[in-house]
Image 1 (spheres, rainbow, N blue to C red):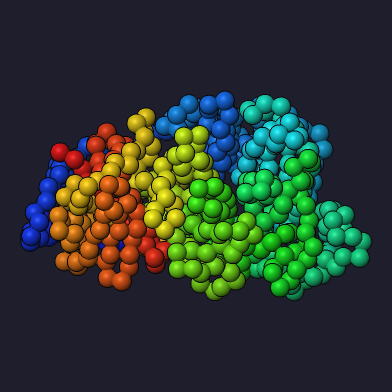
Image 2: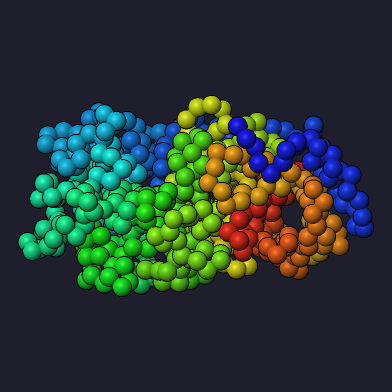
Length: 505
């Protein structure tokens, strides 16, 4: 596999060690002194969506998988597998199996129960699960189930919206029930088939409240992109809006907010933050396999219906090439204390805990030749410009802290640096050396220089390399092998994210 950024890791390290100049710094641990190891969860939940109840963290994922954790550092499975014996549902795979009436089995031969999102609806006084069933890349249904307890059993209630229908089977959906008997299904077709370049594949639903307390569902995967529908809190069902073609509002599917033309873009999740006033939209690009280039991107908006823009101010719409759109929070990467590189991070959810801390929750594959995956949780922070940045390492029992620094001398040193770039690729972003000097000079392994500024009595940092300004935070945490580390995580005004790690003596 091709490695990016550094042709020869050892050469880069040696070059960085030879860099000299004013403001000598602490080099920290050598490569030989750094303990190595990857986090091992021991459970596998794909597309994990997080919800907290009674002090416990629950994640629900595809294939009827679910797990629970007391502290986000380890999860225990309590449901897994699409079968009638799975305690998560009591009627999904029995009787008439209404959730699969339109989709039947997936083309690969199994019943697809994908990407659920669970919330407590206080008006209905029920736990409500939104999930999808699917036949192929465009023929899918978003369904709703309810339960009295968060761990279930959930009972299938209704199918909400459909995609991938044709003129011969559209009557098997609720299309005419929603739009009326005179609605023209042909308007959703192209060449006699469902127009999946413009309209959504109905999977990956997630729910959130806006600043006014209204409930919304964001959904969609590849195909016609990501869409938004308001939800009636009293019933859990969609509120279908009046059509507005100029503003990309469709009565059946709601508001188009991102993507299209079957560009890779899936797993949407919106987190509203009262402090910043932003709606943060997270999505995944690439293919979800280990070498598919899977990765996490971020957009934001001051309004629930958008426009959702990236750090360059651009919205990702119906475009031919999309890799430059969206802040790339992470992709494939390696760091000195990892035994193997992490690959294909994606399909995330997010949580703002009661203590105000933010967490990014997603599934992670590894550079080990297999498609095995585990859930991961990284702490997030807000930079000076109001963008979310993620910690380089997973959370441990001791959460990352944000010290106040008085001067650059407090953080000067030799760091191991990763730039996630904006590519959609199987390549791994390898680490290289980055030197921060006490006088604010930044030097990369290839000799490129930049500048660094630190906001006094805070942990806010800005690193300028060329014309790119990366703004973020300096944090202190423990890595997954037990090393005490100082980390920089920052977002560039070019949609790149950078990490830098200093392994303390």
